Length: 387
Image 1: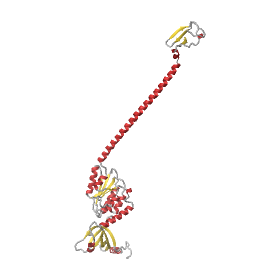
Image 2 (image 1 turned 90 degrees about the vertical axis):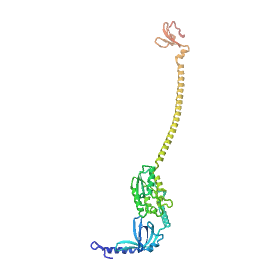
Image 3 (image 1 turned 180 degrees about the vertical axis):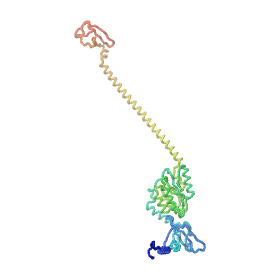
Image 4 (image 1 turned 90 degrees about the horizontal axis):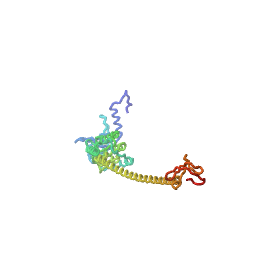
């Protein structure tokens, strides 16, 4: 080791590069997995160059591969394919660059891919990411629909057109990204997070028009699945593939069978809603009419009862008045007069009660049942009536 570097005694570039090479050489051989994003081989060349990329982290390494190692890969290596490589890191002193010298290449076949996806699905399910209870409900009428799709893709057209047929005023915030290949995962995650931060976006649709297992790998990527699970906005998966369901379908809040289905699911149908409003209005009117009829019947019954009560009360009072009148009539002086008696009064109006109180020549007023008489006492006798 050289003496420590200082501002006064810095290391030359060659020294730093040599030290890095020493550290890299100590690493030995490693097994590394990634996606093949570049494959450069020329006829007659002693080596081929392969770029191996980690799609979730946007990190890549360059491999140098001998023709023999490349030819031994089964199935043949192709761009976009997932591969596991045994390689030895090498540091190029003169260029100051790192490369991996491939010793063995194992392209990941369909069966292995499906097995690995199943293991990942099981792990994420055990964490609760696929629990139906954590799914968020979709809004009835979103202010803005976020759409993540391929650039100028049929999936975008299907979602937008079908949604606008149902609700012409629907608004979209569209993020066009790569939906396959090594850059798909990072672009989809970036678009998802941008739409999730937008307060106007109430639902996000991730759409692609199907594909084979290799093409759909980005939508089973663990980083993307976790990003969807962490989103606060409801997410609709519209990958459009029935045979091999990507893991995005399991973590999304709603799975649409196709982009067309997603367009129909995220907004209501204006014609259906108008028909429903019309139907509810009819039901309300019928209910109101029935209630008015019931209330009218109840009012008629109450009116009849009140009339009967009033009539009974009046009749009872009439009977009471008649009885009282009969009693008053029975006690009235007129009743006595009607029986043939008379009331004799002196000129001052006082009633004459004894003959002694009316000496001869006393003028008297006699009230009869019918009419009255003015008389003068001719004679009086105690104990006898007057005439």
